[in-house]
Length: 473
Image 1 (cartoon, one colour):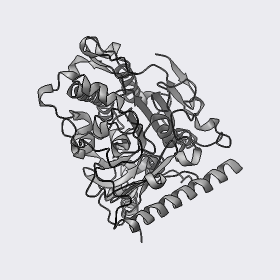
Image 2: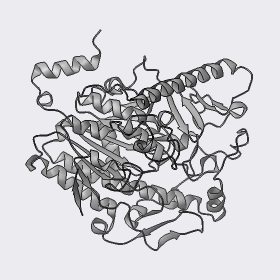
Image 3: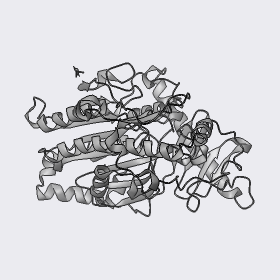
Image 4: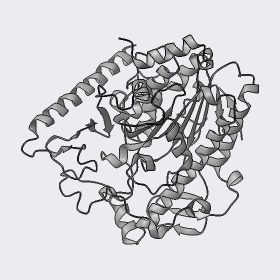
């Protein structure tokens, strides 16, 4: 494959303790291993929504680090979510709210933003990008910010399938199958995983060994089409699989806004393929987990295992029949709710689950903080470091703000509000996590509606002010 060159908070006391003790972790800057999987929802068993997924490698990472059980994307589709992640700027700030809205540096006034990997490179890190990180499916092509990486892996991503359980309806890309082939040489996601694993294993002998590394790898699966090796299908007994617990018949009746894209559910359900479709998605979830394991094993065998931050995330969620949908592309929880795990070797909260609502928008400021880099002013999101040390921190009350197309919505630990005028939606997610009961306009909920609207207005105004500052420079 071608390579291309291109009071004192608790966490501060802990860091000070490391310095005083002369810990090796304080003698050198921490590395970062960043791993992303496309369309990876929140079915990790430890999160508690669904216990069917077989993900041993992510389970061990979750047991080692902090698992954020309520991680929400900035937007429920690839392009705005990934642009927000790497630029550090919300979709409402850049105007990138759909897959058709382009690349952040093509927006007037945003040409010179400093992307996350670019900032790490500026701070002396050797940065490596591989796979689907920005919206294109591989690095090195347009809109992958190619000139702001130290090194690129430009191979393709994904996996072939075969004849097992092959489903190919005449409807967009809703296809799946299992195949028997040489997984290690014929599946692009796995080829990429082994390439990056070798890079990690040899890094201490490379000419960049005196630099800390920031290695980012983006796997394409479980993105459609759900093709992968039959071995991952064979992990599951289809007769024991069940429809998601978040599904409720008639759930759309109290939602005044027309819900698009139910056609896929009608076709898959009508063809009697609901459980088989769940089987296909789970097989690809397990395939992504297999590739994550290749990277984790390489890191564990390297000299860098005790001085490397590991972050795993999906870019957004995915419906598997909930709200009569088989997609992302919506304001509902299933489309935004993904998996986020952060392992920082020095975090006091390692091994715990954090149930606070957080955003993928928080990744940029958090990694900057964990690596001790100077804080960046024009970046949006919250530094999650306090939650890495105290996952149940009572004082943490930071709602997340999301955008999709021309709709904005906000979620706190207790409430979710979707702004759409008289067609708005309000859910008491503390007791109704699957958003079954729309409370907007019902007696007794006027005050919380006002409060959520005021918070949304504050968030939008903050985006407007920052946009004006950036584009004025």
